[in-house]
Amino acid sequence: MDFTQLTCIPVDGTDVTLRPVYDPVLRSFSVHIRQGDVIYPLGLDGGFTYADEPLAAIDEALAEVGVRELTGEEAVFLYAGLVHAKGGPDWHIFRQQVTDGDIV
Image (cartoon, rainbow, N blue to C red; front, side):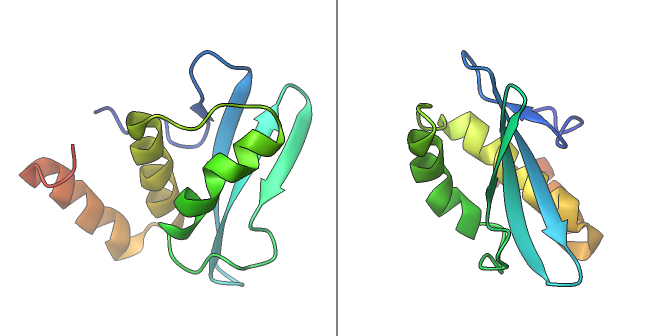
């Protein structure tokens, strides 16, 4: 998998892109769901402390705007984008897990 473009993740077959965000002040994750010129924020209230938490909520949020659920590969890219947005040792651990084949 190519993890070089993690700031704007397309949802294949739709006009939706996902922007993973980490707020170091709130220490929380969020996802900006962009459909055309409209942005639907998910998690701006600081409710997602861990990178996997937005993954549990993203499909429901996409359904609210009439978009299908993420595929497994898209979910991996979103998770990678969230971890990358936070950076630091978490990103290095993730990259090592990919290199070791623990994450496909």
